Structures are given as structure tokens and as C-alpha cells.
Length: 192
Length: 220
Image 1 (spheres, each protein chain N blue to C red):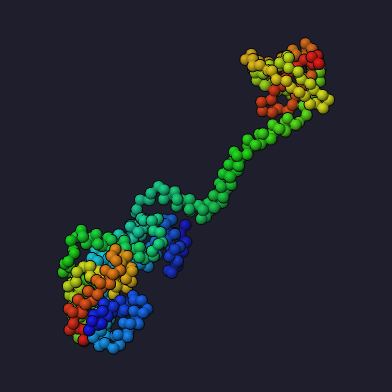
Image 2 (image 1 turned 90 degrees about the horizontal axis):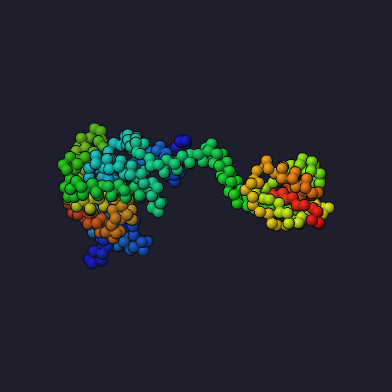
């Protein structure tokens, strides 16, 4: 029953096949969106392990509800919305509104590509990442989620509005606040 | 600096390309002439690059396999199973089966719809078909394949006029007799009728609800 899947197979065809029970076709969609779905979850919960688990749950929920997906929005936006909803619920459940766990703060941004043979540069990068991480921790989870979805995941304002269920104007004001706050915290880095 | 305050709200959306075209032009013109806003915009860009560079994605090796395994373990609702089964049929060999099934269904529906009309047509044809006139000889008459309708007794007073063409006028007036309800009795009845008087047997091909009526011809 399963026909061969090309890496860039048409999304509509993959969705149709997935609706008919072809789990490999759905697997191709998972491959295509897994990184960004994890990113969306991570932007909200700020923990990699939780984000990966939530992303898995996102894809399972999406598969179970494929018949309800009506193509009014793009499949990716639909996935991000599921991921964000799960992540927001998770955060509420776990009571992680304001505080990052210590090890989460380390794992969130701290994995830096290590340039070989230049310990000074490596140290500088580590310090920079710690500063940025510290600045992010200063933000509320709502502001942090918006700026990470925009800057790291590259979502548009409309997508962020859709995913987080807030008006576009709220997205703009939260982004403005988050950027201003980060600039204020990192002002000594600004001119460097 | 009120103008700068207004512009600062738009610097982020300007950097993100989320403004209308005329607003983009307005911000671009302002930034060119305002060092503060230009510096703020440069900072936004720097932080964005840093966030992207330092943000890490967890190792997703085996992620797809894990998701597919979970999906394969999900219970499949009955309705979904049926739909997928039918879909798989229509995709492959089942296309022939499905076409045949559809054709058969159409044939059955057509037959059901047309049957009453066909019956009506047969009845009309039967009426138009010339009646066969049997010999007045009792032996010849009894040798002919005859059908006698159940429970119909010839009406002695009902006249039948058979002309040379075999057409007949059949009078009504038969009555129901429970005693004469079998094929075994019919031969005896016919013999009795023919023995008593010369008669004409009006016979037609077997039809549903066919009635053979014997009427004494001396009435005419």
C-alpha cells in the first residue's frame, strides 16, 4: 500500500496519505516540521527535554485529529498552535510561569558551537551566551515566548498571534517591550 | 524627540518587515537621519543574531521513529478502519471490484424500478395476443397444455364469443369455489364440461393469474 516517498513530496499528498493511515507519510511530515515544533514548545516552556516530549505529543495529537484539519491555515501553523497550546497547558500545570529551573537555563541556550583552538573566543562566546540567557530570564514567560518565536523560530506576527491566541497588536507590544528590556539589560554589549 | 518616540515603536516591526509599505519608507527615512534610532535598530539586529546563534536545538535523532511508533500503537476507530479499507480497495485491485459492485447495484435498482412497467407491458401483450381456440373434441382439448386458475369456476351464464380470429369476449361472473383449487381437478372439470355439450376452449399462453374459462357454446 505504501508508495515510495520522495523527500520533497507534496504536503497535500502526504496529508491525504496520512489520513488514510499511512504512518510513513506522516513520518515524512514529522521529519519536515520536528525542529520548529520543538522550537515553539521550547519558546514557551524553556526546557529542552520537556519541549521534545511536548513535540512528540503534538505530532500524535495532530495525527489523531487529521480529519479535523481543514486547510484553512497552513499545516505548519496548525502544528505550532497545537504545540503552543500543549506547552502553555504544561507550563500552567507545572507552575513554571516565572522561574526557569537552573539546569534548564543552562541547556536552553548554552550549547555553543565550539570553535577549535581558540580558547579566548570560546570563553567569550560562553560569556555572551550566559549574558543573553540571563537577559531572557529577566523577561516574563510571555515576553520570552514572543521574542523566541520571532527571532529564533522566525514566525511572522500573524503566526505568533495565531499560535499564542493573542491579538497582533499584543504581539507587537510584547515584542517591543522584550527588545527594549533586553537592550537595557545588555546595554554594555550593545556597543561592542 | 516625540517623533523618535513614535518611530521607536515601529523599529521592531520595521526590522521584521511587518509594516505597510508607506510605513517602511517613513521609518527608513527617519533612521537615516537619526543616530539614536539607527543605533537602537542595530542593537535589535545584534540581539536577534545572538539569540539565533546561541539557541540550540536538542538532538532529534530517532524523534521521527518514536512518533511513528506511537502512532502505530494508537487504536484505530472502527469507522476509520472501514474507510481506509474501502480506500485501499479503490486504489488497487479493488477498483475492478468496486466498479462491478457499483454496476450490479445499478442493475438491481433499475430492475426494481422497471419491473412494474415490464409486467404491465406483458399483460398488455397478452391481451393483444390472439386467443387460441381449442378443438371441440374433448380429447384434443385435454391434450392441450392448459392452465386453470385456482378457485375460479366457469360461469355458466357468462357468454364467450370467439370469432375466427380467436378474439373473444369474456364475460365476468366467475365465483370462488374452494373445492376446485387444484390442478388435478382441472382435467376432470374440463372433461365434464366437454362431455355435456359441444364447447369451445379459449386458451392463451400461461400468464400470471391466467384463467381458462369454459363456457357452453350452445348458448349462442
